[in-house]
Amino acid sequence: MAITSSQIPGALLPGARKIAGMYNDIPTQWSLIYATGTSHMEAERTIHMRYLPLPELKQQGTPTTFDNGAGQRFTYNHIHVAFGLGYSFTREAMDDNLYKSAFNPANLGLVSSFKQMEEIQGAATLNTGNVLNPQIGGDNQPLFSTSHPIDGGTVANTPQVQVGLNEASLTMANNMARRFRDNAGLLKPAQARKLVVPVELRHVAKRLMETELRPGTTNNDTWSVKENNDLSNGYVVLDFLTSPYAWFVLTDVGGLIYLNRTPFETSMQTDFTTDNLMVKSYQRFYMGYDDFRLGVGVYPTN
Image (tube, rainbow, N blue to C red):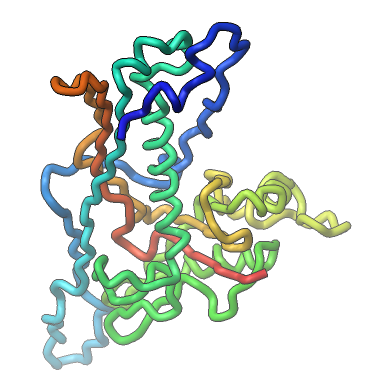
């Protein structure tokens, strides 16, 4: 059903002081935490390999130990999703609209709509990071888990006890990243680079990240997070994080990826039989991850 004159009665009469309803878009946030790339296939995959472990002690005259366990371990699937939205105007509604510059039939906010959809999709990776998505595959664990499997053991990138954001818990998360291991069990310390918080924690993040001395104390102690060069890329507030308590520390490993399959596009045409103006937009991409070592996620409930 097209938008008709009856749906825009105020735009058909002179005397309107202002046509309101369009607002400023929030600045792009997802690009601050995702690495971007392009894709030319229906789906992409990231293959995680296991390389060599530590060498073993060799006694004089004994043979060298050979390890032939290297090879593929996990496959992460990156399946593109498509989004579309459109609308149509009757010929009469277009002809009689006196305020086309403010309520333009060819521009009813499609760009804003798709921009916000990208933000929601970008935050969704973290919002659902403690829930297993079998479609992704990988190591058959949620993005943030206490038991990511590696040869001979497990690796955690979320604490056993989910705690709120404060000096102690932030230090704990930074240290946890330094204990990451590869699939062969070799220590592969990651450096904490960026803190990601919801709107409700932005003031806590500012106090933690922009102090020169230990936060919340009367002591004159050095704030070790800065002295150790942790979180050197600062913090990011994501408006579309759904939990007011969850927070995340991203590392220099990377792992959050955006693959652009079909860039945002808009098309417009007039229907021959009805004279309706039809406008639609389309976009296709993948937003997700390919390595749990991208960070530490914490999901407290208060």
